[in-house]
Amino acid sequence: MLLFLVVVMNFMSNKLEVKRYNFFTGGSKAKSCTLVLRGGSEQFIAETERSLHDAIMIVRRAMRNDSIVAGGGAIEIELSRHILELGNKREMKDQFFWKGYAKAFEAILNNFVTMLVWML
Image 1 (cartoon, one colour):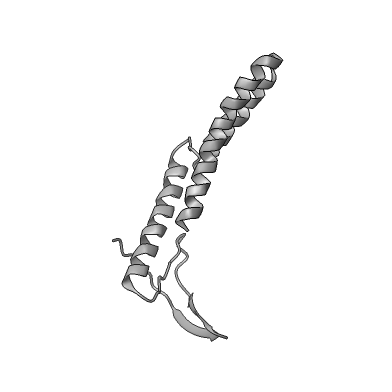
Image 2 (cartoon, one colour):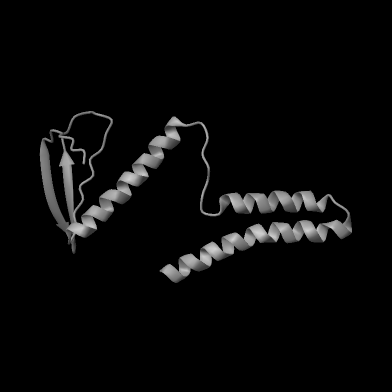
């Protein structure tokens, strides 16, 4: 785990209604930010830390690389759209097969969403 130390001139913890907010002011002009993780259990903090690390690494990789492969069914939907466009340029009797092939890619996404709903 990486630990970065930053000098802060003022720290305030204010309670607004039922929520408590922490304010760090008077810090250096560095191009960075500080995330303070607070939670009810070590397991929650550890999971939050892993999720934040994953998100930061994804952004880092996206900034360093020229190409990005989208996830979450984006590729399947784009393939389906492209195959439908190609199928619409074919003869009428061939369009049926092209549309069926395109729908197969959409079925992959439908199965993905169905499994996700069952996991929730």
